Length: 209
Image (cartoon, rainbow, N blue to C red; front, side, top):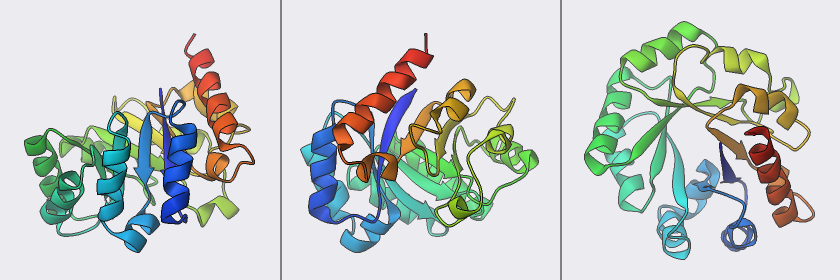
């Protein structure tokens, strides 16, 4: 399992300071959608320069213009970009095509998806990596749990999990063995972000036996 740090609702300086602080514990740096909207692709480019050894994900949440926006992300230095599961099939196909050409990867964000049939249809399209996602607004009313993981059960898809992940929620998540665990405020709002990230990573490693 890999640990992904989600940088959301943060300013430029804080983003770089947090990655510097936690770099030994994290595997993937995620430039969140709101941060990209605030600073554009330049923050992706500069993060790539500052941390060349980490995998870099641009959370583009592509809904249309798949070819153009995927190319934007990869040209800026992202290794992975995101496209929404509810985007038109043609848009998803365009992003997958660009990723294949560039030797990069697309993650399909399953925000709002609640049926396994929808996930199987994505796999038939050629999707190989999906993100189980409990949205920020939904976190007020729901919790991470079995229901999300049931969406990908038996599909064989590479899976990431995001949405209010904390040290406390790890016992619920770890038995499902997602490929990527995405943590945002559980680290970024911690009193000691480095210690929080290290603790989560150690728990992940310990669960791997």
